[in-house]
Length: 356
Image 1 (spheres, rainbow, N blue to C red):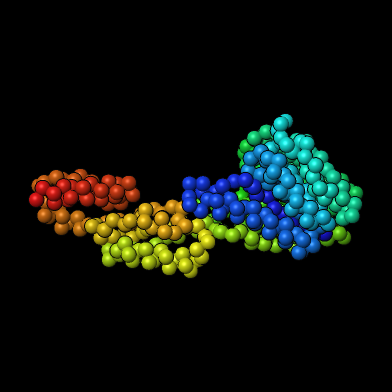
Image 2: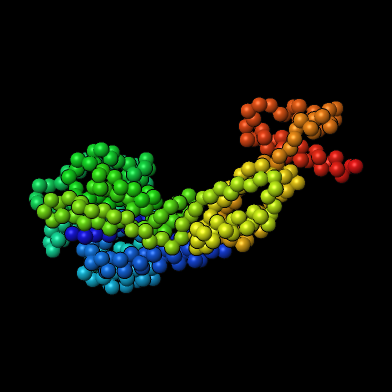
């Protein structure tokens, strides 16, 4: 029995909503989900498990129609869905009256239920969110009946306010596979008995690395996962990088360095840069210019001006500059104390220049 496991698609979300590329990121979520459907067809899987937060918010009728069409293009694949905390079932939800195509099973209840698929001798267990949080542990006490079926559990959560559970207790539950959602980073648990696929597309700057889905196979004889492989699918990655500078680095050189890094890593990706090192005290980097030219979600200047405090103190032993250095400079200064010293000296030197 072959399957694809995905979760946390967040269809309808607009990542980086304040950035020029936000509309492209919103479309990427939909395009990557379409790619998942294509993978399910090309790999001839039996099941597509969607473990919560398929939608970023309450779906509209048009959202359901779009996805229902995609599911109709893979009629031989059983699509099984649970709702997560973002797309939880509400009394006025259009999900309550929507008619899915025959190959789709949507667990609508907030209590555990199951559906048996006799063509694969597989029973899927799951439930959906009806509230924003679930504080109680509902799953790690479950036991699979001895009925010679393959049993799969679908659940969305894993933190203190969203279905907390004990991983070690879950390991002995007897499920062939546990399809989890809610954590946006891919992770395999319990010796491939359970996994978080993460979000197919990264949704904010903290979600670094590859994103995609899990493709697995369960033996009909042993009822165990024989293989579980991560398939990268995302169109963009968030990449955090540091750029080292020296006292000779100029704005033009910094821009060239960053453009070369982006060219090498891929202009489709989104970057977080930290500028590190010692710079010329007279140099101020034009960060706004850099962010206007590239897909940079954040750029932080952690560089420090290379002042010769000994020489400055010798030159200004009895004025405000010398007093400031004597008052603030000390061994093992914290980053905040260093900034206070650098910014203060910078301001005092410029004040002195203006008065001379």
